[in-house]
Picture 1 (cartoon, rainbow, N blue to C red):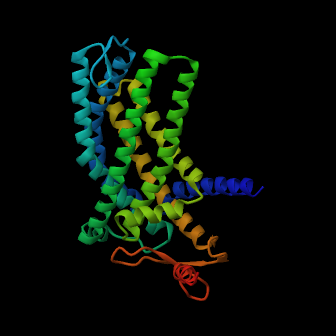
Picture 2 (picture 1 turned 180 degrees about the horizontal axis):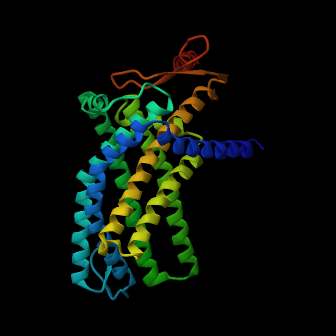
Length: 342
C-alpha cells in the first residue's frame, strides 16, 4: 500500500515537473532570448554534424542488412571490406566531433539554460546579458563545471561503449550459432535493461551538472550528491529522461526516413527542434533538482531513527554536504559519536 502511494506521488510530481518546465519560457522574455543566443553555435554545428551522421546511419543499416560470410579477428561480420573501412572512418569522424566541439557547445548552452531556469524558477532578479557573460567567464566556476562534465563524459562513454560491445558480440555470436526465439527474446530483454539503467544514470549525471553549475560543487562530490538526491526516485528520473530520449530518437528517425540530408531545410528544422528539446531537458533537470532537494530536506533519516531537517551546507575545499538535526547538531557527527561509543 505504501509502495503504491509512493508511486502515485512520484507520477503526480513527474507531471508537475513537466508542467512547470513548460511554463518557464513564458515567465520572462530574457529566458527565450538568452537561451536562443546560447544555442545558435550548437545549432550551426549540429547542421554540420547531421551531414555526417545521416549518411553514417544509412551505411549502418546497409551493413546490418547484409548476410555475414566470414569473421575478422574482432568477430565483426562483414561482407564488403571497402564498406567496413568507410564505415570505420565515419565512426572516427563522429567520435572526434563528439569528443570536443559538440560536447563543449552542448555544455555552454546547458550552463546558460541552467542559470536562466534557476533564476526564473526561484523568482530571483532577472540577469542581463552582461551579467550572464560575467558568470560564464568566471574561471573558478568554469573549472568546476568542466571537471564535473569530464567525469560525466568519461563514465557515460564507458557505459555506452561497454554496452554496445556486449550487445554487438552477443548479437553476432547468437545470430550465427545459437539463434532461436529464446535467445532473440533474451537479447531484447538485455537491450531494454541496459537502456533503462542508462536513462536512470543519465538523470543522475545531468543533475550533477546542475549541482556543479548552481552550487559550485565539482567532480566526484557533485556526482555523489546527485546520486544521494536521486535515491528513491530512480523511476521518476528514468521517465523524465525517457521523454527527451524518445524526442531525440523520433527526430533522428524522422529525418532518416525523410532523407533530411538531401534537403537542407528539413535538416535545419530537425536540428532546431532538437535544440529546443535540449533546452527543455535542462529546464526539467533544474526543476527536478529543486524538487529532490526539497524532498531530501524533509526526509526521515532511517539510520539515526529520527527526523532530520536538512540544512544544505556545501562546504568548500571539496568537503561533502551534511545535514543537521532540529537542535542544530550534525546528523553525520552524531552518528559517528554513536558508533565510537559502541
